[in-house]
Image (cartoon, rainbow, N blue to C red; front, side):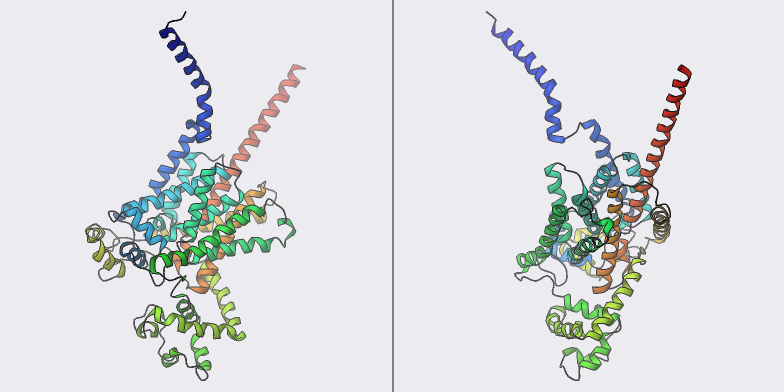
Amino acid sequence: MASPTDENQRFSKHLIAYIRVHSSDYFNFLCMEPIDARRPYLISIALSMLAILAPALYNNFPFLYSDSGTYLYVGFTGLPSEIRPVLYGWFLRWVSMKDSLWLVIFVQAWIVSWSINRFVRTFFPATPALLVLGMVTLLTFASGIGVTTGMIMPDFLTPVMILLSILLLYQPVIRRWESLLQAFLLFFALASHHSHPYILFCVLIGMVILLLIPSFRQASFFPFRRMMLVTAIAVLGFFAIPAFNYVQGGEWVRSHSSNIFLVGRMNEMGLLKPFLAQACDKKGYGLCTYQHEIPEAFLWDGNSPVNKDGGWIANNRLYGEIVRDFFSEPRYAKKFVIKSLETVVQQLYTFDLCVIVAERDGGFPYRILEQNVPEFLPPYKFSKQYRYLWSNEVFDFLQKILVLASLLWLCRVFLFRPGIAISDKGKYIGLVIVLGLLANAFICASISTIDPRFQARLIWLLPLYALLLAIQLWSSRQYNQERLITTNTDNSRRIDYH
């Protein structure tokens, strides 16, 4: 009869053998792949995140923009905003813990880095992790990715929204937790900025319109169930904005300034004054009193009627009547559409990196920091942005060269070298990116204004796609050459043998 010690030893040996045989299965169940295969990917995410943070680290403080003050106000005071969604303000509050804005841009950089690496790993799996890091580093110093991600603004989410939409549309079946993470981040992007749901709606509508072209009428381009999923998330993000405003301020409204922005855009297009000159004889708009005193900077000029006569909330509903009457006139509606199409072309080519200005004492972001987190002011005053030591000239010059080179190379590949073997999915990805760039320019230029910041926040998607496609084509060519050499060598050996 075996002693208890022998039984324990035998049990231990069986247990160890069982663990050795099945541990890899358990690990694959949890992580879906061995740690050795994931290590370069994880390292690439971490190092890419640090590369993206380089401009902010060099600045010595996260970048601030004039609109940053509104989001800081929402996050640090708990009050609603007249013109901005509240979700990004909550994000600032929860992530910073009112202790450090560095925590915010570290999380932002992680989201961008993870999205890029997930995108590359899914659709361009042959790209080495070191090359991914090299591309992100190049984009950091030759595009606006670093400045946009290092800024206290939700603009970094615009390209993330496009990348995540492509992943949800075209990626193979993946782990459930990862698909849920992608869906959650897409929802976060959509509910953080007023323009984002409209941009994604335009992309989806563009894909539907392309179905009229016979070459696009295939399930691989238009995966119906995936389209319904992305559309559902877009609708959810659209309605989340008024829902969160209701939670924050007790009123179900997307924005207290939608009509104000449209009237301002009409003024920039040169259509407001002629319309008022015609309509004020019949209508008693409050704006008619100031029709000869309307400044060019209708939204931001302190002497503008909207700012002198009660503010944005008080005037938004009143200006709604002007907007309705304006668009009910076919002549003015037609002019607005034509002007919008003109400004789309202008916005497409307006992506200068001139978004960093010194937010000095008295500015809205400065006042919010001073009133709510005054301990942030000393490090901010040490930043290069505050001390007028930050320059975008080199970034801007390199970005223009990189974008132009990418555009020319993509035109050569798709227009003048149709015989180059590019997978259908690779073409669809490029098409969605182009639709994203067009939709962003259309929405921002038509309902807001022409601003370099709008297109600069996602223009880097074009060089990223061009670089990945170039690496893929080069790798394919190398593989074919090696295969040809191997085949010729084998044939020579057969001849020598015979």
